[in-house]
Image 1: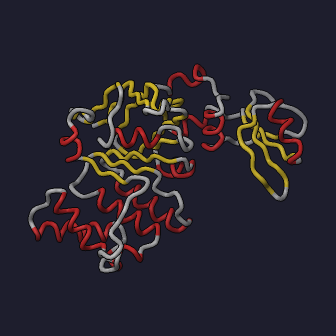
Image 2: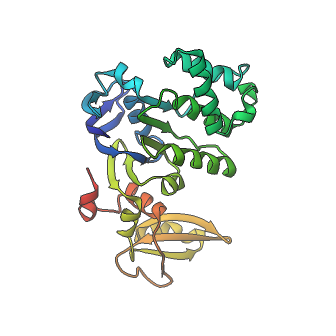
Length: 300
């Protein structure tokens, strides 16, 4: 089973070109869609979730035309949007039972069994009778995954699921996503690089509505081996270094400004080699420092 997206485009009435000829083939397992805010991630996710129309292009999941057979797709879809509302005075157990009925699980006995299993799976069993208004952000996200898992979906879409979560909840949520992403397609849309590096066997980088890079994170990062250099500089020298070098990453370290630069050879005095990681790849890609021909086999 795979989700195949071909030449998908979307322009909003205000003139913003949100998607520009997006093509992706997404296999079973966890797939990371990585890009900055405004890159087109949510537009793509909402289109695949049948919540808005594309201007052109196609998408198909295991014989289902995603854009034309919306009702068929919804039967096998689980969706956790970036923002979703919950009834604050309803318990997790009651609302999930209500969602199960809406999903077509008609038997009260079956609904009870399914709801109990999902509350256990998402580590919400002990909180099942609490009002959702009392839930933390991480608990709400786990409840969102529980409702997305109703009906044994074949495709789950999660849009920016860990934004705003504390480190402990992020780890808990990562573990949950890893567990459910074994035998179905899970698309994780995020701007948080560590979410993709920790969870996804394949990924794509999207920027300004275009897919810039596709492949396995470890393979893509390996392409940068020997090309990333680091240097500690004064903050006042940053602008000059940006003009002279391909600066992919800037962070503060021990009161100094640490920069990563992309270069095939040692860029200059004071630079030391640095093992590349997904963050280097991501920023080098969206800043336009990585030429597509060098990684042509990874781009759809």
